[in-house]
Amino acid sequence: MELYVTARDSKISDEMKEYIKDKLARLEKLSHKIVDVHVVMDFQRYLYIVEVNINTNLAKIIYKEADADMFAAIDTAVDKLERQMRKIKERIQNHHSKINSKIAVSELPAGEKEADDEFMETEDVIEEEITVKTMDLQSAVNHLDVLHDPFIIFIKSDNKRKNILCKSSETKYELFEWQEIAGKKVLVEYSLDIIKSETGIVKSDIAGKKELEINSITVAQATEKLKAMKKEFLVFQNTLNNGNMNMVFYRKDGKFGLIKIEQ
Image (cartoon, rainbow, N blue to C red; front, side, top):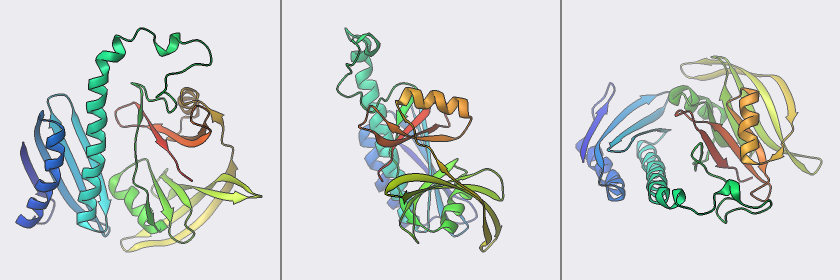
C-alpha cells in the first residue's frame, strides 16, 4: 500500500507520518485491494482537518474529519473509515447469497420481514454510524464551515442536549434541538442569524422558532418524504425499529444515509 501524506501551508513531522501509517495499517488488514492512500492535513479556524482518500480496486473512499486535536482527528477519521470498509466488505460477501435467495423481501407475506431488516439498509439506503461530540455553537459552526458538510450532529455543551446544525447561507443557520415540553420530547427548530469574524461568532440572533412534528413511518416512506420536502435530512420514528428516532439524509454519492439517533 502506497501512502502519501501532505499538509497545506505546513510540514508534517516524521513522527506524525509514522503515527498515520500505524493507524492506516488497520485498514490494510481489512482489504489487500488498497492501491494507495493519500492523507491531506490542514488547519483552519482553530481546527485540524484530516482528509483521507483511499483508492482500491473496487472503489474510492473519501472521509474528512476536524478536531481541535490533530491526533483525535486522525483517530476519528480512521475509525470511521474502518467501519465503512467493514460494511463494504460485508456487502460484497453477502451480495451473492442475496441474489440467490429463494424468497425476496418484496415477496414475503404481509406482516413478515427478514430478521435483519428492522433497520432496512438497502442498495439505496446505507446505514451509517456517527461520532457525536460535545461542543459549543461556535465549534459546531466552525466544523460546518471547514468541512462543508450539509449538517453536524452534536451535544451542546451548555445544556447537554442533542442538536443538529445545518447552514443555508453564509450568515443563516438552522439549529434543531431535542427538548422536553409538557413531558414529551419534541424537536424544536431555531432559525439563526450569525455574524462571524476570523476570531469567532460576533453575534447570534434567533430569527424564528417552531416545534416540528416527528412522523412514525418506515425508512422507505421517509426517503420518499425527504424527496418531496427538498430538504437535506429528515428525522422520523422508525416503525420497523420499535419507533426509535432515526434520520435519513442525502449522501454525496446520491444515495441515502440512515442514522440511528439515541436520545
